[in-house]
Image 1 (cartoon, rainbow, N blue to C red):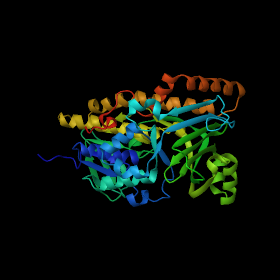
Image 2: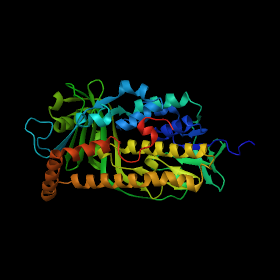
Image 3: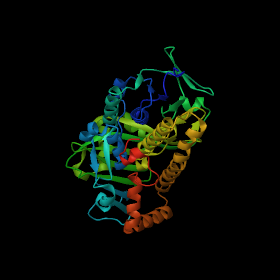
Image 4: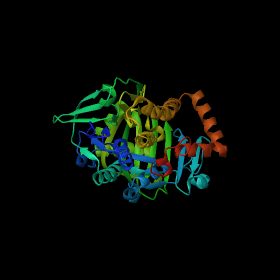
Length: 417
């Protein structure tokens, strides 16, 4: 008997989390529809997304398993060390080191991660290109541009109406359209969160000398200033300021921006020359109160938009994608209704605690470091110095950041479901 559905899964949102989930589900034998208001060509433009992303080494295993890693590797820069410094004083990157720093080195966990680095820095536009090529080479049905104008959950199906009048039907719809997810709102799923009064200024710079695959993060009173290594002797700067100051940095002249940058960057790595446009992204916490609803699941920023202080936002979203794909593929093979409450609850129970714990941890980290109160600074500097001297604790942090702890989905172990 013919299925009453047009597809097994409808994925709303063809961004990095949505496209990765669609690939994972399709690899497992599910019939997937991928819907996005933007055509792929628009998402691949250099001006569409100026950010770069730290991809944990376990997440890269997932991308390799899905056939995406090969296209990304020429554009992926290893992060072999991460140096974290508190304040404007000389720190981990200077000759006269302050005790208020943390040093993470991939060599310390070499046996655990098979010689991989702590992670890879990849420009988002490169990730999007690799994902788009893989999606277009698959049997995923792509509706892009395809604006979602309505989402209806019935006892038997999720129905998605598009602006062109077409209606898609599947046992489950997955919301992956970011913080303003229509799928999440249509399902009545609420959020909690707040703004930080900060924005991240993102720019790519060319360095005067090689960065040595080292990432630097300086915690300053207005927020972190990160220097993240890219290929071709470049770096991605993530410069956190108050929202007002960040908007001024975005719109000021090249000369003014270079002047501000020189004061912040100094002669570190023989200076930095900006390349390409500047981008500003407001920073906030948005955490969905639930991950599933009838015939509905959400992943990525639709489920948890977090502060980029630890560079874990995309890794969290791709772990969602891996977990949900594994749950649905296994349910399909067992002959279960993949959109049933009992199946979707397996995904929610798998990911709920990890997402909430990480979001709370990042929020606390931002609040602890984005101030200059002397007693707070003294306490955190002592804490940083202590952690830096406790090898097992430092290695535990690195394994957690690498995504190698807890109940991992098969894809994060480099295995297809």
